[in-house]
Length: 403
Picture 1 (cartoon, rainbow, N blue to C red):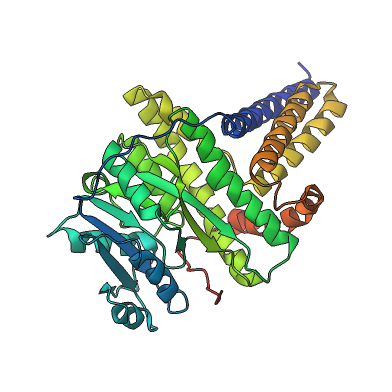
Picture 2 (cartoon, rainbow, N blue to C red):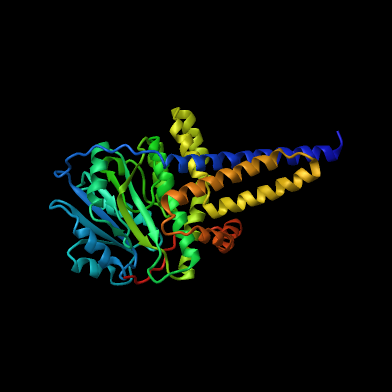
């Protein structure tokens, strides 16, 4: 066989595998978005009034926002509930403000171990001598809607499983940039549409880092002490592997503001997306091994959900494979990879329009979607940095004062 033929076979086989994997991911993404349109099954309600609930609020230099967050949380406490702020390596007035509001404050000082996972583990260790029935994690910069703590605690008590609230990020009131509009839409797809779809088929919901409730025995079954960039995603997968599949509770609503400064926004996206890619690298083989060992189909579903890349990166991967497969097709007269790439792109496009039409059309005019290419260009340096020098340490996003 001629060397040219061997090279052609190699390239065809490579692109056939890569485009097939892309089609599988895009098909699953379409499945999640389409399933989100199905009617919901209402959850059973239970009486949890006699349950002891603790709300843990990890806070690192949050003096700008901590008072507003605690004020809203305190309105939702029952008589036997506790609100505890974990002032983690703080150098500002976070602890002082929290104490003046009447909350319990515990302070952690260990600059060598940085990250929200270490702070939460510190809080759980503090509770060991008097453990609650349910623990709720709320970030210090979040707004918790009225009744959300009740809804999360009720579901966790009724099912004995972790429960994730609907967590969305919105633009600051004065912000009108297309970048933030597209960012808000991407978060809706990731944190609302896709979990809705998974919930329709009783599949595990990823954890988003805030608005999470856990029965005490469940949260103590895994180790939280970590500085991982995506400690929330890691925690959800660890619990799923251990048999504690997380439930999605869209009635419980938690919101936060997108960063107002460009540098803070870039820092936040870098931490999120580098962390996601690192989790894909480390957990895909683990989930596959456990799916075979435990004979669990739901772990295969978790792999597919994990491998749905951030939307901008998914578009970049599709464009790269589409263009490359077309070039290979011209050179080798084999068009199968190109057809598969086109099918993947079609699935992705339909999924996006389903998500937009059902969940975002009221605030995101269709013409705004035309700015997506500029948003993707803004994200390219984040992905190039992952290839050259991936972020490995947890960095807190700078806060802005919002009304």
